[in-house]
Length: 477
Image (cartoon, rainbow, N blue to C red; front, side, top):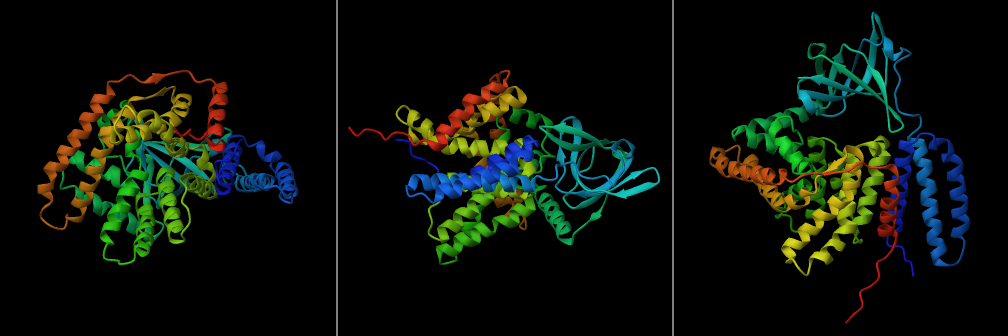
């Protein structure tokens, strides 16, 4: 007998997720979204009136798909690309706008900026503009979210995955930064700079890695060190995600031990994660982790079951409702696929590894293998290469990074006292241990393959089976 494994909340959120994802990849789907939504809603309403419980559940899922299709079409219309105030792109010679996120380093010494357009210029003509442009500046400065910027250069449109993206490449001398648009954003930038100054008492490589792990800013990490993370398949360690959120939540829970009621401690600890999200800056992996933990805390306060798949689907729906274009970002796809693999494949690998390996080795390895198996098809399809050694590298690397993060929080808390130089040696020792692990696993060869579009058929079928089919119960001896 086939029984659905996912709850209605999971199915509802996943329907919205899939709808937005495919609508973003293929805008012509929007032409059929309205009729398809009406058909799904009409069918679901008729099925909901039937007596058998299974048919009612089917009606609920059809209604969820119809609502998701409608919301997806509404949020994705009009198509991306923005407006340049009537000026053709080929005539634009300059523009100004506001940074919507912190600058991020790219390959070749390039600094990347995401700018929300306010105006464009062409000779002596200026016009209001809207939309988002990706700006690349070689040797550009590190800038924080909320700065006004002006650039002298052109804008061109690039079509990727069925959507239009505006990009620009300008010289360093033609790119200038102005004031902040908000006092709150200016205070955020000042707080980030203050954290970096306090950690500067440590050695430069240690401070740079701490800033990357605490604030998500990798600009100070040496290129050779970044190459080791890539070659060992461990680049995900630097992405702010569930590991960082769990450690920070644990630190907040420790500081709130004086609160007698555990429910209040859970509520306050999860609430403190949102200021951290604002400080570190938005990313799909960090947003997913914060939303899931906050939703789980709310479920605990309301005495509700917290199923990981429900929380993951809820986080996906929340992020896509706020920004549907994030469905086309690789960071969003890898973040959710990795956790989905841990939830659905981790238990399967744990059963296979539990007899030969002890639990303290088999369970972390099963979790790492689940994430690796889920993300490998996407990595092969995108880059033509994946790094299987990352699953093994995670075993020694994650405990070292966890200890390094706890040590960094201790350094930050004690930075007001003249004891920080005493902590420099153990932090440097942990940093050298992390680099040693990276060097060891970086010598393993990557998996290279030419991905064909039809390969997605068995992958999609496998995911559908894992999501919808309940595995058979084990026979009792």
